[in-house]
Length: 180
Picture 1 (cartoon, rainbow, N blue to C red):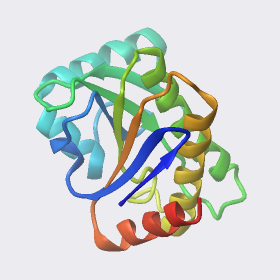
Picture 2 (cartoon, rainbow, N blue to C red):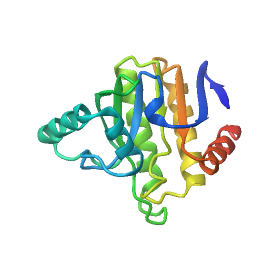
Picture 3 (cartoon, rainbow, N blue to C red):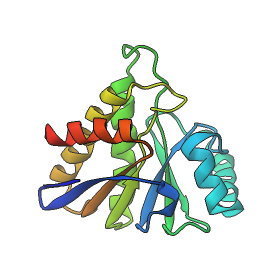
């Protein structure tokens, strides 16, 4: 499924983000940048040790990556040349700034992609795994944030793909994309 926004494409696919042939994939990272479970672990395993080495160097230079922020590394052995590590919020009921922090991590990942001239970027559903963000709320915020960014930034990527791991998550994102 896809929709064009300001001449740019937002698409949804059911699949594995580590297999995407795009300029950059986005990792649903934790603030340590040292790998973890879920999407984060899968990206580190598929990309090999070069990604972790770059993350360690970033930590040494700047410390942990705050929630809502993002950093860039190479893609190691992944088909994507780069990985943008975006730190989403842990869900605490929705009244601790989670929606703005989630929007911020999508915007910051897209800002990095724009600054580096990336034409295609693939996102997972950030914060909806172990961080517990409800998928319907996350889908609405993610799709609206990406559409807004693409509309307001002329040099932003021409294709943004949401790579969703299961049918329930895909359905939530499809509903959000329909509502645009």
